[in-house]
Image (cartoon, rainbow over all chains, first blue to last red):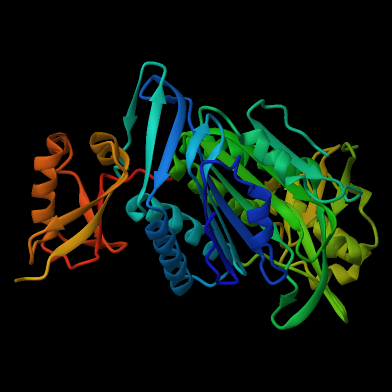
Length: 148
Length: 148
Length: 85
Length: 85
């Protein structure tokens, strides 16, 4: 588990030996009496891809670089939107069907800021953070590529 | 508590005698092995408005009409985006600072659908559903009006 | 004689506070519109004047224009500016 | 004689699977670029050919162009197409 010390931003890349992401902890981290809105995004493991049955996903990361980039993405979000608190977590190792691989929570005084920031953060994670996912099927496996 | 019976859409207007919204129950309702994304929006009570200290919010609704309109909004969202499951809850009565008055969760195969639908639903709630909020200050109170 | 038109009127939020009532039963002349009904309500509850330019109507749980004609048994809701969320 | 340039190379995802290693130490000629280093790696691990058109580099935890010159002690990561989220 890697924490970045900025008091109102929590970034965690959760080691393969850990269990499920503790979503309540991240939501509670961003809860703030001055905020009127909390937006969250959770990426979960789907049971099918292009008609093939997915058994599980396996994630790995270049952890120190990924942590730095996540901190930079959160800092950019704060420059663009008026945010109170942000939590970003990405799980590594095996993620079974239906469980969260990535979770983002952002709080703000106004709802548009929280929702826009949440979307920006997941889009940036997909576009630039060195994390990889292998999709494991019943009869094979493949390293995925984010197309977007 | 008012439930709408469509199996993949949960709508609740939670009576004043109830406690906090059970956010986990709504998130778990929309969790789906076929979904790759869950977006949520939570509206919370802020401690200040225009510099005045807010003590609490008090909500009331025209419950049967609000329930119908919420069901219609969710149906519209399903027509526009490819969604799996939706949960919408609004609390009535007194909502203390920092607690949720409204909560929306939507799951979808792809993240843009979940996030767009979530935003559409909260925007539509604010624009058209007959629910009212009174802001209670230390020295006064006012019925609010959604400007947006 | 023309049939009487008896309706139920619901008050919410500031309208409820002004009238001190969540609802009343009201007899209105045949062919009255929602707007006509509001005029009757203003004679009973003059302080509704404070909000009568900002309210809208819902008839039987659907938003309706001022001009809509009331029928016997209708439920007419006085909807002050909403503020849910 | 010119100073030797010793770097650490990190492999992730498919690159790690192809090489069978998470990282190696590598001696490269002075003034080698990241792209030059990849050519050396291809002689050691010919199957990297499969992905060498799709990889990018990170030098000391920052994305870097093929042309960047390696210095002693650098950490060069081979980054196959990412797929986080």
